[in-house]
Amino acid sequence: MIGYYILIGAIALVSWLVSNQLKRKFAKYSKVQLRNGLSGREIAEKMLADNGIYDVEVISTPGQLTDHYNPKNKTVNLSESVYNQRNAASAAVAAHECGHAVQHAQAYSALGMRSALVPIVSVTSGMSQWLVIGGLILGAAAGVGLGYWVAVAGLVFMGFATLFSFVTLPVEYDASNRALAWLKNKNMLTPDEYKGSEDALKWAARTYLVAAIGALASLLYWALQVFGGRD
Image (cartoon, rainbow, N blue to C red; front, side, top):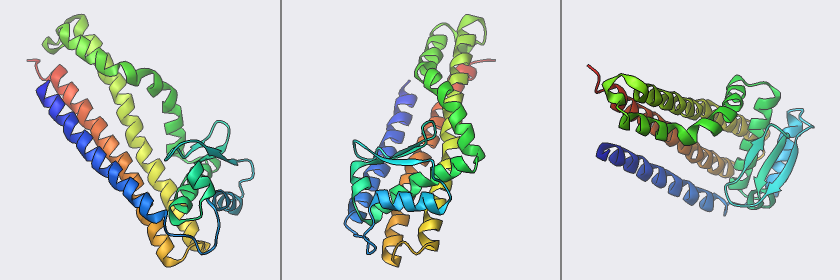
């Protein structure tokens, strides 16, 4: 277990560093006011319209960095600051979330896969580690008996969460690429504003990368505990 705690500690440290840097970037680029004077809401509505999407509503949601696209009710949910403010950070976030709406409208396969995994992961992720630990206590490392199969079930559940994390990567990177391409092609931002938006989205994507690596490392660690003791 000591090795596991070291692994989790290292991943948590990297995650904190990336998250902290992301917050710094957004704070920095929130001070870069847009010359076109458009708010995050207006940026989002224009990007949707330019992509021929008229059945998605742009709404404000409480909190900070709570921005997301909801494919169930077709809403682009922007945090209050992004929704109202007129800076490079809000433009980046608004366009990114609209990138997800464009993915949905164009039936982007990775987004469909991630959506299909959501109900599975919401049920399995909370119990996966406990099943593995319980299985090990029941003797899973010996490779026989009920404990082994309980632990294997836990690994399968953990595998769904890991798969979800990796499927999320192309979804998020593609949404950012769509956002940046639109911002550039439509001349929505000045070169300096664009560079700020691009940098902010790069750091946002890195948070998903760290999460995926962490999920895989955790899965491999527990798999080693279950299968490593077998002859």
